[in-house]
Length: 177
Length: 176
Image 1 (tube, rainbow over the protein chains, first blue to last red):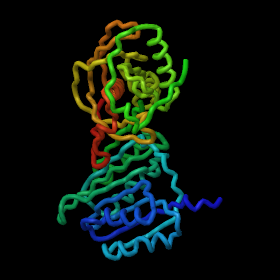
Image 2: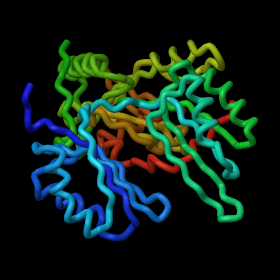
Image 3: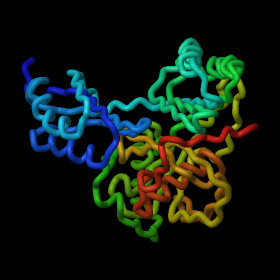
Image 4: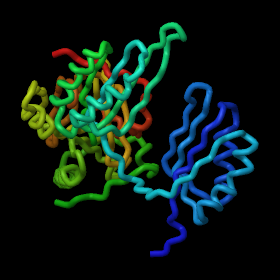
């Protein structure tokens, strides 16, 4: 099935944070006939990172070339992957897990491994480093679906707490009306 | 009985205020049966407002019985959810509010989108029933949320008008 209009790409941009990144990048896309789908853009440390679903009728190379002058002038690293779009198919999380504690190596890998074993299907994870250089503090929020049920995750939480962090779990009941 | 068409954002009627019902007759009853069938045909289906089918009158239906049943069936920590079953609320008015709770909501008029909304935990509301008789209800939790969500529709408000941050929020765990 040849459908030149239906090409979707995931565009990733990373660079030192400064004003104007989003407006210049999205304007360049618009001027080249591209459409945006879902995006996630945020400051991580002193860097700005962008992930965007982009609909573009040209090739990956053509999309790259359309953005290269903007990315060069803003010193952004650009990476493009061809993807399937699958829009309008949001999954609704039924559980939210929060973990926080003194920052130490291995927190995220240990916590997510334990939760994975207990059936947590991760939809959204964000973590933040707070505190200061002497005493950094790590905060993680995860939303997902409890594929093996909530009890399995509640047991997992006890194991997580033995790592020496605080952990909480809340069921999410979504009211649709 | 008929399943009516649900209007979706950005239909302007979803932003309009509905008028009070003044006639309690056979045509009102027929509309309410159709509205009920429409609610049951949709996903979730714990509530519906007349404005969601483009009928600009102050009528809502809520029914969280299925949700309450599902909570009771939980193997660990089954919860007893207080509710009043199937309710037709005409010209509803919330006269008391207490407490605040954040919860996740979606709406048949805003497909494929859910978000966090703060609602009162406990409410007292007055309304007329299908025959025009005055009723008063004390509601809490999920049922109170459903009533607030639906009554908002009668005032031209969608849950998206009340979204609070999706990120960086700690849901407080309630101890039972």
